[in-house]
Image 1 (cartoon, one colour):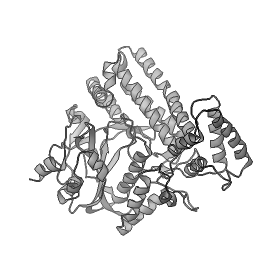
Image 2 (image 1 turned 90 degrees about the horizontal axis):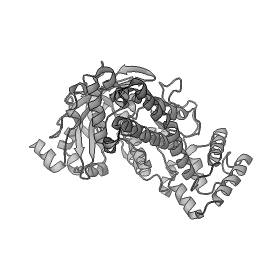
Image 3 (image 1 turned 180 degrees about the horizontal axis):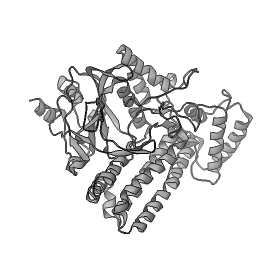
Image 4 (image 1 turned 90 degrees about the vertical axis):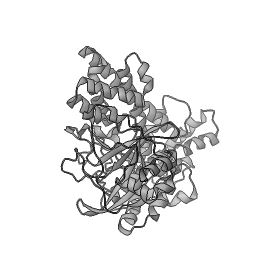
Length: 491
């Protein structure tokens, strides 16, 4: 009866194409049951877009699904295999604490993965318990939903439940499971796994699957696998540019954390930058700054080169020609990234059209922000609404001179002042998930069982370009601290 209710009333509509790949790509794995799950938060609007009944999802039967106790009818729970370069070192990986329930076909015809994070051990757990803590799962919920609202391609968070059990990390933590929604969980690391541990037929099957699922336009290309490579490069160039424009630092850009679909995935030690500094690192494990803010574009290019290497057997039958095709494709990444970034920066400054000196104007402004330790988000926000001399940057003579050149540039375009401000308002968010606000919400939820702080934060983040008075309290940077802010790989 429960399964029938899940299917006919809740709206589950699974069609599990990934399970049709060679079985070396996954292992069938049921989630491990938990004692007494409780719903912490449900994303009602996302549930609706998936074709699911939010009211039933909040019922006991819905919570049982999110806890992994009762997979819905049509689900085929599996753990996916993949490999990857972690901080530059190759290793075999896989879903060590994640299980893919299946692929939901939405009312709009989209195919989206429904995955549980923290549902217990899998064949890829490598000694881990396969569980997750409440704090990291709520953190992913906050950041991924904020990214979505900012217009940055991302996985989404549907629900978080507690398990009624504790887990041991550095300390004892409340166990939790996140339900994640993604265009797919195909990663650069999935292709690395196929290349290193599978046959050429396995690799071809995976590439054909990726094309069919994400890049159907490549099916008719003269060289479909080259078209796949070029399409992934193009999407990742656009994605990383959006990260840079928003001041987002992923924190762990291993190749297994780069999707083929072009979505942001795996929110572990991620954070948003306050003071502008290209060397900013938050992750406690990134001691050398490999994944610092300023390094994200070249690291994305490095990861994509690893992706291109996996496709070499498919690009051309002649090895030398195949290598040349891959190198030519990868060489386009810096140009594509820079074009996306420059377009976005022009919009942040209210610039329509293109002039050769725009890049210099932008870089000069960023240099002044760095020199004066200006807040990244708030500086662009203030610039949108006519900045006054209320900060070290705006009070400086260098800024006054730069502002004159900026105003001259705006004066050479046909668009009105109103159009300029509208462009800037739509390009410069009023709010981001400030690190101290995220920590405040997590502390209230985890330590006190108070979800109201997180709910209010999510509401403020849901329309970051609104620039409303209600958002004002979420705009202030953190007060000065004696120690730098650090994040940890908890997700």
